[in-house]
Length: 439
Image 1 (tube, rainbow, N blue to C red):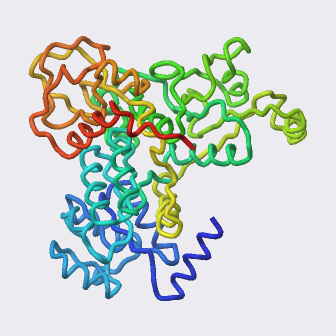
Image 2: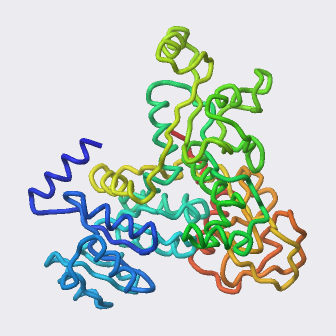
């Protein structure tokens, strides 16, 4: 991190900066704008939002003067204003990815179909793309990653999101030669697959958050999606569909994440999972086959072995995104990306009995929740990825509560970008093009 700071300061001394184009000025986007405002050599030069006034307010709260902010849908005006060190707000997300004055695009919308569209156009315009949109990544990320590689740009998830924080632990342990047994995150509320915007409305109001977002946390969809991203980046699999999700304290994790014959819960090593009881942190359970290393770990008070836990008790969401922006710009390296192709999938499960003709309302809604399964199982069952559930998708026939939806159960009235990219991915998965060696 110190190396990044020095390089950013040197960039600023040269009169330059990493110019960031942000799409989405919600909670994550606002945090990013304010944080970047404190960083030398980096600027959020343009922000797109369906309500431009929200983006303008985010700039003003970050310290920008009203006279420095231009609202426009004209690309030429935007480029000129940015060149004069002003800030631009706009409704037009596509304009952001086309501007010559943008180096790195950040998607902070959190909407799968929007994220796929943004990433597609960013890559075609040879812009690095950083996603605060794990839902889009787990649905079509392997296709976008391959596109970015060909275009010579970086496709990456973000530091600060739990998958990115887990990946940092994985990289740290792996480069030191430890065997990584399990990777996981804490869940700060019990799993309730029946959670809906109505059932969480009071809590959402008290916390000042979107009820659909809160429902997606409680029904487990967000956790399943995040661990799918980790799976596709590392090659690790859920040990069972939906993962184990035990309730446990931190000190129990080394024994818990051992093989069953050793007194643990695992059928195999190299798994992703979540735990009720260690939130908001992320963890890696590691081991070694070298007696001298075990002795050293005991000396360092890491436990009695043979398994040990590495734990990070925080993740700062979009406040850490500048790290991913800088790594993409300077080193052309992702923080986390689906380097292993489709290893796992988060598929849609009926939250209630669904009737023929009923519209599906998306993640955190009333109709479906997500469950992580292996990609092999998803292909075998033709299960519907959760990221495809959204506007203009209807059930063709009745589906019982608790059943996994399949492609044969639904019809999409408008095949948008994410559906088209997913069709490519399904075809390529059949020919194993995306089943690459993992890091």
